[in-house]
Length: 366
Ligand code: FES
Image (cartoon, rainbow, N blue to C red; front, top):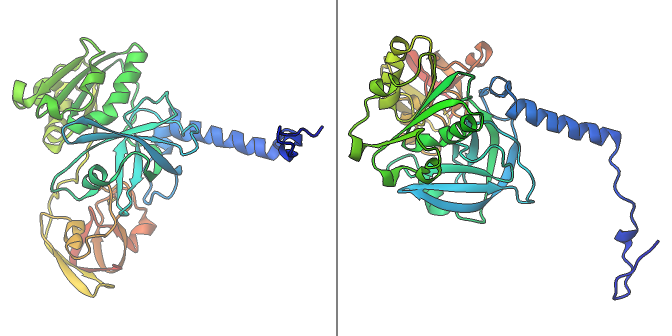
């Protein structure tokens, strides 16, 4: 039956029968839901979603910045939603997003919201003065209503099964830890968090942590003095899973003493900065397209040296797991220091954030 609007104009839409998806469409929809579950939210997600040499898979989406919120001194959080208000792909604690900034920079940020609320994602960013520009761009140019392209969620820092957990977060390292403590708390598991920082004003999400009475120890340097990571690790129960996310001065000694202190425990770390160069030697890199040569000092990466010549060269993690900095090698022997390129890929490419010359100059396709 044809209906009419009150203005008397026929409304053809009202005469349509309800859309009935074909069997093929229903199967495709079911497959998408299953994919999201298995690759992003299942127990196998962390294994199946391991970082690939080049991250050209995963969910690519453009999201709207719903809110930019000041969480602490020099820290803002961004709440991201789907432009159509739809549900976002599921994720599990420890997951991160690749965020593509308007300048073309690519950065990775841990999801720090509620995994059970898929109406939005939340990330938090500390402004690094004198850094490489990504955090500055977010703080100075992005605002509510803007859109950003993201890829993910992916998880390289999964929460393992354990009888008890000790979480140690340094500053912005609290971001992957927040959803972990939420999950452990919901499950009624045994957990504690030691939250370190320069001062309370620089430490985001203290208000959210206040509800976990008796579980969270906040230790700002200006109240408690510099942290003694060995002493903190001794507070973990035997066999505990220790999750540590923070700066290198916390991570390196923790790795050195964990096994001795807690032989049946496990240490899980995530870092937000470049790996230090170990056993480096000086070498030259010829940039074939530029027609110039850069000298790489023994204590810097090829990426750092190349950025002096090509500031916009692509990179992201600086730790050899995202593949963004992979370049084609035209000549020379490479000492590959990554663990993600296959032997075939190593024949003609390298990750300039880690790998170096095995002796003699390199010529690369930049
Ligand atoms: S592998 Fe991520 S920047 Fe090099």
